[in-house]
Length: 84
Image 1: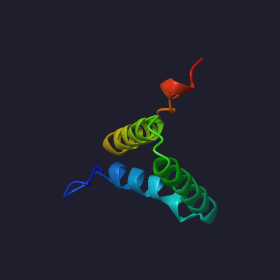
Image 2 (image 1 turned 60 degrees about the vertical axis):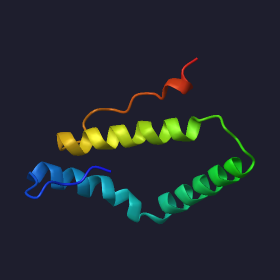
Image 3 (image 1 turned 135 degrees about the horizontal axis):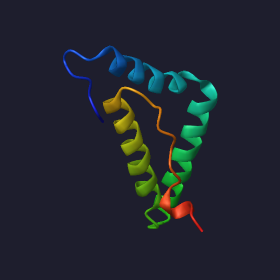
């Protein structure tokens, strides 16, 4: 995960706070827990589709860019596996 520098720009701090806010909402926390439990069950059955890893890397990349840029202005792109 990207780390804030020793002396972050105000925009970097604001972006980090903006990204952290939704994690405090109980509905999101419940949904994330449900997704994690579903993924763990798939892995226990030896599901090797790779989608979970790809999705995680996509989200991590977008969040990293938002933190680096100090904003979340760029709209998310569709995940490659979701195109027809």
